[in-house]
Length: 69
Image 1 (cartoon, rainbow, N blue to C red):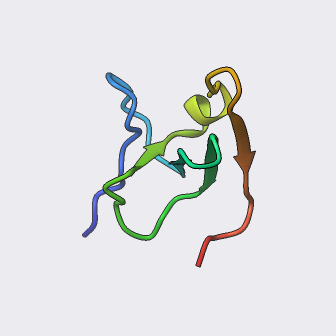
Image 2: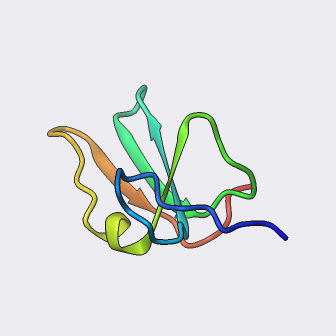
């Protein structure tokens, strides 16, 4: 049986439901559905932390509702 993936935030014990990735070239943070596999450059987040995410000044946050292929 596969264990659920936990939120990447330190000390958080909630199950992850979203994945955060960064595009440094476009200064964009993308939050989308939980990736099928753990991504080395992605961060799994619970809904609590995903909703409260802020980006550095000059960066844009994009939230997607559809799985990335």
